[in-house]
Length: 121
Image 1 (tube, helix red, strand yellow):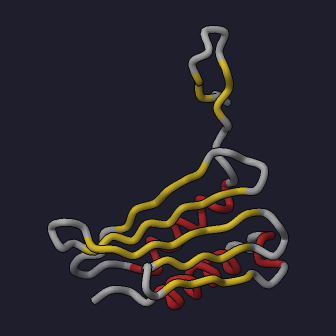
Image 2 (spheres, rainbow, N blue to C red):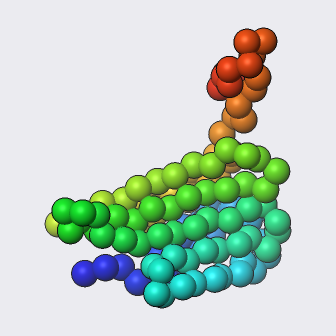
């Protein structure tokens, strides 16, 4: 049974509140397209947004993709969830909330040769 997108956003927002994420200090905005299976929470503190997409893979398996974007950072973090059997929604959404609280990944830097390198630190 496919998850309800608004229920996922509620779980995610609850996990962020439990972690006292500053993004939850201002009420976020929710956008949803049931036809496309996409929902988005835009944080009111202007820190960024999380997009949730629900779709079926070619083999019929359900996939939930959560993409984290921070304002001012070109890099994104994507979490793919493949719920099967006794899937622990709270635990998996908690991992996404932890990832948000860790902040954006290091942004790519340019090396003298022009090839992008990942910052280490």
